[in-house]
Image (cartoon, rainbow, N blue to C red; front, side, top):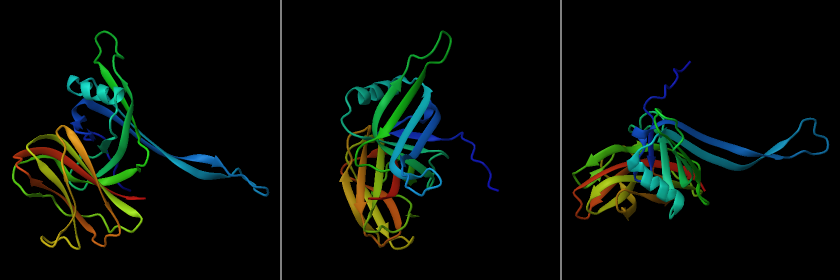
Length: 243
């Protein structure tokens, strides 16, 4: 019997913000709607799987450095922000559950005298997105040597009906950089094929880059090239999804 995972080192990234230090409770829900599907002759009540409902809640302690961006995203949403939640520390290759969507609830000022001021955040996916379960390709780090190549991880090939979703969470940077998505047939160095190269936005910010199948390579890695940039702090998650 496997040992349980004790939730102590969960990591929460939202757009270009690391919410880990302010958070202490996470909920990630995914469920199919139950559509009644009863026919004459059935002996039990039947259902058909309907649309997938996905949502994530993050609770914790009020952080003034996060308050302005969270309030701004709620008041004037301009783009779907990626929310990445890794339950086991967001180390290299660790699982990350991701939503690309909007903040629909941000609650503060729910405390009495003498209590720590909490926050509650609720996110739901945007239209056209998917439920993304992926892997951390670059743990949060500050890079100063370029070009930067991450570690190859075997995520699998892409069929013609699949996409790779690459999420670059950019927490800080000095100068310009391109986000690189590479694939390879094996784990050895060299021979990589560049599948995507996109200029990163201003920090704090994020980039969602996609690679459509079919791709027969099974090994993937994230990288960076510098366009005059000298330092960047980021974390990267890759997911393969059906489209």
